[in-house]
Amino acid sequence: MTTELNSAPVVGCKENLVNEIRGMVGNAGELLDQAGQAVATEVGVVAGKARCMSAATRQYVHRNPWTIVGIAATAGLVIGALLSRR
Image (spheres, rainbow, N blue to C red):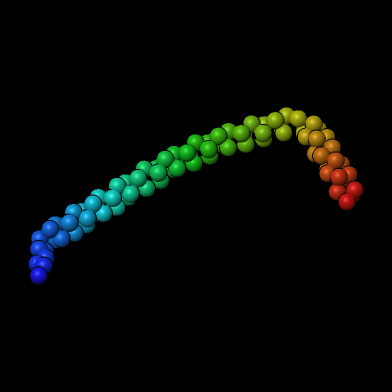
């Protein structure tokens, strides 16, 4: 009994597999591009919020310098007391 292999179906399957893999790689590339754009947008939003908070903090410190000095001194005393107990 001899078995003959027909190579046409194998070649067709191979081509289909290669085409599917190429499509998946293309889709993955598109998804990476979209994710990169989303991250860049979010970084821009966060940076804008950080600048706004920085400006508000700077303004508060300039308007209330002695309050800030008191808070810093109190925080230093508390941290110093906690560290000295070790």
